[in-house]
Length: 383
Image 1 (cartoon, rainbow, N blue to C red):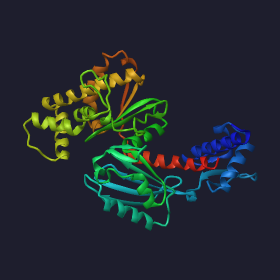
Image 2 (tube, helix red, strand yellow):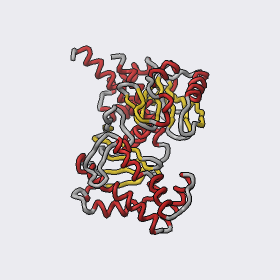
Image 3 (tube, rainbow, N blue to C red):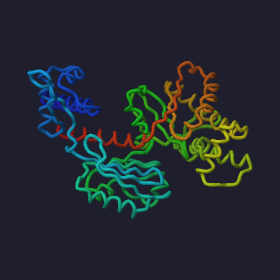
Image 4 (cartoon, one colour):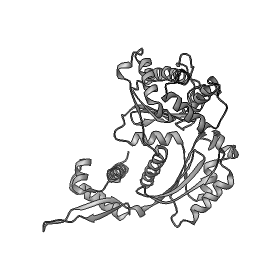
């Protein structure tokens, strides 16, 4: 790398470090010195350049002494805006967020199982009416998408858009770049950004379907199509849980483990009539709470498959932390007990740690994190 380019690279890297430091709360020059390990003069030079570019704001703090008042450096919300289109449930949520992540516009659209073109077009037109043009848009979806060909591979919710260059078309309508992210990728992103999370872990979100991701040393595994998420699209042999195959057989994992499939199995075994998923789920969870033998037997069967899968993955990747989210969390006492018994037979049992996350909005928070990180690309383009 040429000396001039190297200096520019260091300058941009330092700017990114400042942004990351102040997004969680404003910092003084002295605090930034301690965080970054740079001199006061170096920090002053970096912050001055960022202030001139409109990236940050500098405000003097009140002081009880007659000396020079300290300044606090905070992100400048007006530097730029980004949008989030969240379409992974029956409701499509659209927000516009400022450079800090605060929501300045929000609207929801009922979509049902399939997102219709007219609904997405209406959402885009509504976004355009907002006087704040986003620099980029994070589009969050449920399913499989090939970022290399810009096509949905497997995503029933977006069947109407199959065969189209989706992000390119949407970008043209919005007037800014579109970042495509699987909903489980953003959930994993939120967990990765949490300071309390380990560097390497498995994340599983189990509700009507099965999703999640693998994180190794703070890096999210991106899969064959450049998209992480949807454990139901990973292959596995349900008997030995050691063979992985990315084809239609992989849906075995999702079918066996989703709360929907387990609740349906309980309904059939108990001879109950067919009802809506939400009703069947609540009935099944209530039956588990009563320690109904049929319900616990159905749950044990599913968790047994899950245990073999997790045993295999922890062996292959040397990952010891497993995080659960979604409706499986409500079954924590039964799931945890069964997994502990299964893990007791594993060579890695001494280092497997299971936690059940009760936080909400992981998908949206992760999408916001992706949107904020994308601002750093603006700095990269200035190199």
